[in-house]
Length: 498
Image (cartoon, rainbow, N blue to C red; front, side, top):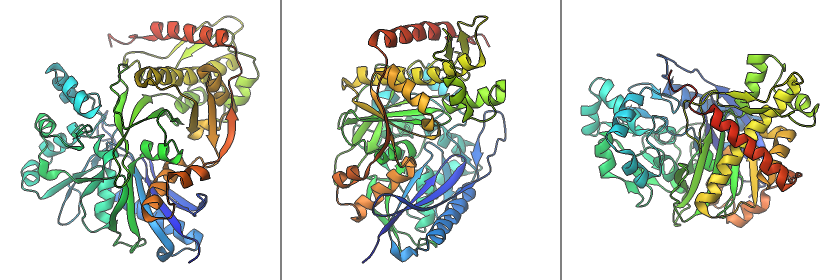
C-alpha cells in the first residue's frame, strides 16, 4: 500500500499553514500564507472569512505539490484553528454575512461589564469553566446578530449558521456540514462542559438562538468526506482548537502532564484527565479533547500576555538588540541579572493575577546596571510568569508536575529554557518537532483514520531534542521567587486611575 500521509490545516490568527506528515510523524512538506488583518475601530479586530478559506486551500495545494503527493494518498485531514473567533454565514450559499470578529477583539467589553454587574460570572464559570470576558465567542455572536441587518431574525428562522473557524472551514470543505468539536465549543461560553451540551440558560443569558449553533462532535473521529479540491475525497477526521492540538502534539496524554507554548504570549495547559478542576486561582477549566467513543478529557489553562513580545520590546522599543536571537547572547554575557527584577506587565498581567491595570516594572536598577542585566531580567520575568501559572495549576489540581514540555518560537532560546527549569525546579523538555499544533491535529486525524493504532504508538514517536534540568539550589530558587512576588505587588494596579 505504501506510505500513508496525514495533512494538518493550521488556521492561525495571522497566517494559514498546511503541513503534510508521514507515518513516522515527521514533516514531509509545508506551506504558509499570511492574510490581511482588519482594524475598523480602536479595539476591533476582524478577518474576512473568505481570506481564511482561500489562504487555507492555497497552502494545502502548495504543500501537496511540494511533496509530489496526490490527495488519493492522504489518509486523513485534521483542522486546528485560532479559537473563540466568531463567524456568521448563510447556510444555503455558504457566504459570510459579515467579517469574522477575532478573539483579540474588545468591542463587547461594555456588554461583559453589564453581565458582570448583573452577577452572571459565577453562573457562567460554574457551567463553562470560563471567566466572563470579551475574549470568548458568546458576546461576539450576539453583537453580530444585533448589528448585521436582519441577522437576528434570519438566525431565528434557521437561515444563518454560527461557527468558530473550524466550523467555517468544515462547512466550506464539505458543502455545508455544520459541526464543531468539544474543544472549540468549550470556548464559546455557551457549552456546558460538565453535561456535554449547549446550555439553554447560557443561550438565554447571551441572547443566542439555538438554531444558529453547530452540532458538537468528538475532537477525533469520522466527520465527513471532503468534497472540495485540492483535498476532495480525503476523510476529515479531526477538529481541535490550537492549544488543545499543541497539547496532543506534545503527547501530554496522562493527567499531570503539561505543555507551555512560548509565542507572543504564553499558553500553558495541564491535563487533568476526566476531572474538570474548579480553579481557585481563576485559571480556565476547559475541554482538552474527546477521542471517538471515549469520555471527555479536561485541562487547566493559563494565559500569559507577554512572552516573546518582551524580547520584541527590547528590540523595537529600547533598541538594545538588533534581532530577537541576540537576546540570549547578551543575557549570557552576565552571570545573573545584577539584582534587577523585570515584571513584563506592559499590557497587564494574565493568569493567575488577572490584573489589567498592572504595568511593566523594572526594579533594582543601580549605576552598575547594563543592557545585559536588563535582557537577563526580561528572560527571568517570562520564566517567572510561567512559574506562577504552574504553581497555581499544581495547587488547583493536586497533581505534582513531573516535567514541562515546551514549544513555540521563544522555546528555541536555551537560556530561557534553563532559567525556566531552574525557577520551576522541574525538568523542561523541548521536542524535535516544534510544529506541535499542526502535529497534534495530524495525530488526532490519523488516530481516527487508523494511521496510528493508539496513543501508545503516538507517544513512541515523540522525541525530545533537549532536556533542561534544574541547576540551582532550592534556597536560591525561593529567594528569586520571593523577590518576584514583591515586584509583582509593586506593579499591581499601577494604571487603575487611567
